[in-house]
Amino acid sequence: MNMRSSKIESVYWFGRHLYRMHYLSHQVPFQQNDKALNFSRAFCLPAFDASSLNDLLYDHKQPFSFYKQFQVIKRDLVDIKGLLSQQTFQQLSELANQATENTVKISQLINESKIILEKESHEILLFYRLGKHIERLDIQLKLGMSVSNSVTSIAPMIQLLHARGGWGSLSEAWLKFKKFSDMNHFYHFNDQMQCAFEVNHS
Image 1: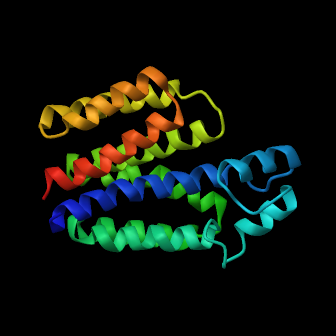
Image 2 (image 1 turned 60 degrees about the horizontal axis):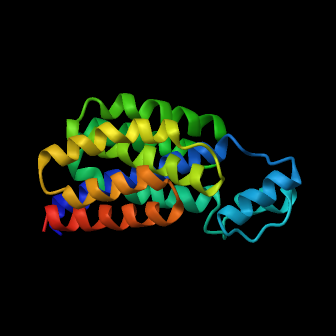
């Protein structure tokens, strides 16, 4: 995989990681034990009620904590720095630094990221949005929620990639997922996404 491909893939993961924290910021603090337990099981977290899950999310040593997840987001930003204008990089970095454990700032970061990235290339915005919506789809599947809105949002982006050429295997995996809409086919789709990044930019 060449350097640009690696950076474009990091844009995709920036979108995924950012949406994960956006969703989580709207769930905390967990107050109902059954809801917290369902969330913990879906994401394989070592928490057994609302209190222990809330503690975990603010424990800096835990991989799924806000703190650790934002360390990943900041690394994503460093990885894609070369694709962004200096102004865009500084704006996103400042927002990320402010947002680490502040749920209001996390929402602001999500809302402003798309506006900021619209100043960059269409390709960057495409992969950011793709990552964001695929993460939403992942969360919906794990929690047993409806995926219809996510599927509708992702479909035209897959069509755009298919039209560029070289993403045929991803399109096929997407069609299979749309037919069955389960975790197994989602994992297969994710595998094909990884392969597509490698094949198209090797």
